[in-house]
Length: 360
Ligand SMILES: [Zn+2]
Image (cartoon, rainbow, N blue to C red; front, top):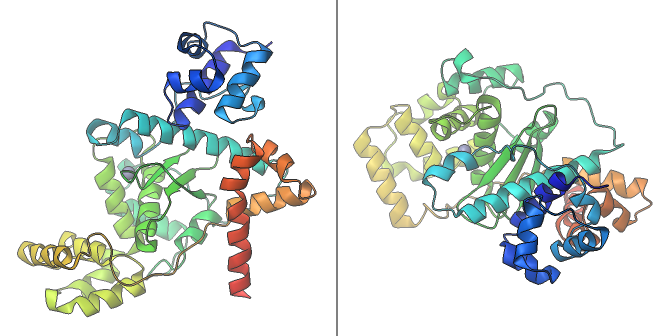
């Protein structure tokens, strides 16, 4: 006996994750749109025959539709705030929420029976009220994690060692750099949009960590606070102020040098110089004009080394070992069909082999 309400939630979530309307699912499953609507409202129990049909149309295993599904919506940061003002369509946002939830289910499945390395420092909630300001939360987290002064060398490695799961995925829109979720009792997960430059990826990750630590509930100022957190976490004011003081537009070479040392964009350094009152408002304006003239608001020179997430790749490798390298079996463990699993998860293992080869 299937739980009609739970199946209804999962059918809708998977459909939305694909960016489909009800009519798209109806066409793909060769059923009427009215039928889809009734299924998603929990008005019709799905018989085994239709369950298989709908699962095949959605390109997911039937097992996935029989999991309980999110009760009370998917908890995600960043996305909720944007809902009020963003250019993104509701459809895109639902697709990202759905993808976030499905990725979490897959990663949970891949974690079964894989020993996790105990981490010395876990990410924990650090409400802003206890520290006064977002920058103070960043400083407290750096201290709690025993980070030395200076740049954060490998942010991805640091976060993964603190139990944060990170995965690059195509979020289907350029309007969103990342999204994160941290359901009670589970490890936090950050999905980061593909093809961000390494400096932008680092800032985005630090921004998401700010949300995860500070914003259990959405707040009015959360984007500003997450940016302030990211700035202070990656480049503490006490280190940076002496370096940025009185900087002028003639000193782009110095900025480029600072970028490579601190592994943050020149645009962020300029913003930080303004926020920390190291430069005047008119100097800041001149910098912005120059960045625009050079086209550096879109792409900055100075390529930083990419930081590749390894944790989820490690889970896939461990499951491949457990299942005698039977990819179909590992896909099932991730509640995915073999083809999409091969497309989205197997390249992680190849990337992992690549980077190992480069290191040795
Ligand atoms: Zn955000």
